[in-house]
Image (cartoon, rainbow, N blue to C red; front, side):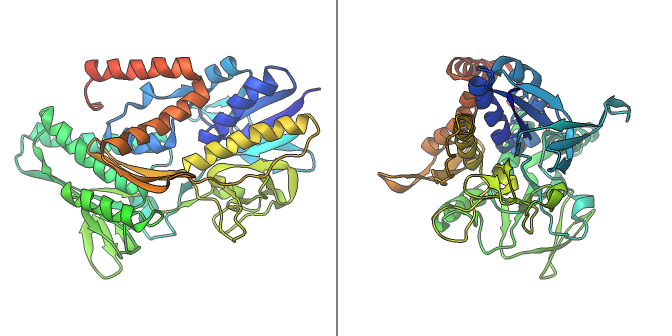
Length: 432
């Protein structure tokens, strides 16, 4: 019987891993590869802020798991991971329901020989009063589309009333990459909506507040990058509040710790991440304070060598002798998927598996169509700051690399051609 490898989670890391394993071990029938996810389609998570503002149509950029499995020699099973029995080497999947609550797929168990958990992360609101009730999160396409619908509804309503000088207040908590990119995309959306005739809310009357608890924007990146981004945001008219932890959120806005109240109709929480709550100490596996599975540098969990974890849900040592952990970035998931592909090949051949060594190739932040800022890191040049058109091209290339891993060179080229044609035949933003 072929070795059973079950990958739970069809995000960037899990989907790339299942695809690579399918093309190698699955095609040769050395192993049976199964991908499990609660949804039928995948969209690259760093694109969700563009889906939320309408600058990207999610249906044009979705990948269907069933088709991907067929093309790449693995099996797809729909279901939400809800339990683990390490002794029996089984996972539990909850029932899949339709929108009316009717059962489509029953709850069931699934056996494995090797299990890879790649369920990603969700937003961490740190228990802030009113956040869960009043804020929109950007953890999945459904939430991003909810923000887009609310944004468009405000503009359509103002347009129908034919009011002049109407306004819309937006508040975003968290000036990390997601918050910064969303603020810039919202400014671009205001310009585009006005250009299409929905100008009862003039672009300058979308008041965007970006609220950060720390002393500067993009705290995870070098200060020179944060300073450049702050300057660009201020040019766009975004009001940036640093050293301003949010104390509470109401239906009308956000209360800052110093007593300042920021009025907001649309409220988005984009600060902090944690692994899904169901991972906390699941069947005795070691987890940390934000529910991440603690793994060794081999990406095996510390208490079970048959269970691996990668991406945002894994707390992996950075490998430099310090107590630091690998940062939760898309490039991390990509690197770890590549390593595990080699590790499983070695495992099938009875060879030792390698340890993961994080390689930081830099970070890029997109400011919609206006610019991009970041740093590129390499063994020859060290850390080089890039901005403007060049940085924007590097930023776009990150998504193309993800597509290359999933589709291959030829099909990615066709997708690029399709995108270019679509820009000439479709509206510049989604208007429905």
